[in-house]
Structure formats: C-alpha cells, structure tokens
Image (cartoon, rainbow, N blue to C red; front, side, top):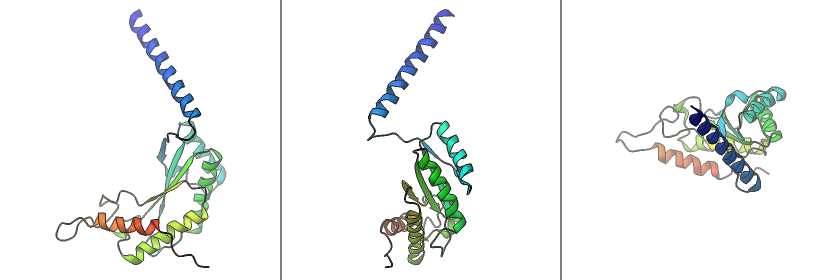
Length: 183
C-alpha cells in the first residue's frame, strides 16, 4: 500500500514538474503559442458585462481561444444590427482577456448553402462586413462542415459526382478575395 501511494505521489510530482516546464517554455516562446479553445455560442450576449462574465468562464477553464457562430441567409450581405452588437460584445470581452477570437458563418438550413454565384457574392460581402466592423477578430471560418449534408446541400449530383467540394471551393475562393470597395 505504501509503495502504491509513493508511486502515485511521484507520478503527480513528475506531472506537475512537466506541466510547469511546459508553461515556462510557452511563456518564453511567445512567437509559437498553443491555442486551446472551443466553439461556444453561450458567450454571445449583447450586454458587455454578461459577455465578459461568460468569456471569463472560458479563461478560467483554461481556454485562450473562442469561436462563435453567426447565421447567414440567402440574400443577406450584412449581419443584423443586433447580431453585430452581440459580436462586438464578445470581441471586446475576448480582447480584454487576450483570447483569440474566431467567427464561423453558416446558414441555419443546409439547403441555403451558397452554391450559386450571386449567393457566394452575398456571403462574401457578409463576411467582409464582419471583418470591417470587428477588426479585432483573429480569424473567420467559412461555413461549417461543408462535407456533411446536415450543413451543406447538395453533396452529390444525379451521377453521384461530388459537387459539394467543387461548390465549397468556389465559396472559399470568393470569400478570400475581398469584394470591390465602393469609394
């Protein structure tokens, strides 16, 4: 019994020492940080103090990155005013806590996937608007799991050929290239 207890204590000491060494090396190597985060819409609150409290819970859990979703619908070129207010609150809360912040935009229905040229244009403008309005955001995820028909329709054409990859690649290419600026 004493031997088992000794081994357990030794394992904890070694694990603690390894963790401390890892944390010291991470602090010394600021150029290469390791991100640990979650996609968590529970932090989406319009009230800055509530968003701050929710984001603080993520930091207490050890996260240094958060991803939230925002809904896009066909024809939409900008988020609603209410959604921008919410995203601003979360962006401010993550920035105050030095957390990385990512926004994922996709449609509430898989059949709304922007497979047509005009809808890809609308989606790209939607994402560009968020980027302009929220310059502190660290990254954007274009859609969510376009390889699954629960998020992107259609996956295959009548001949059984993969069309989702083709259409998603077109969306990525369009979203990557900023829309023409109106001066």
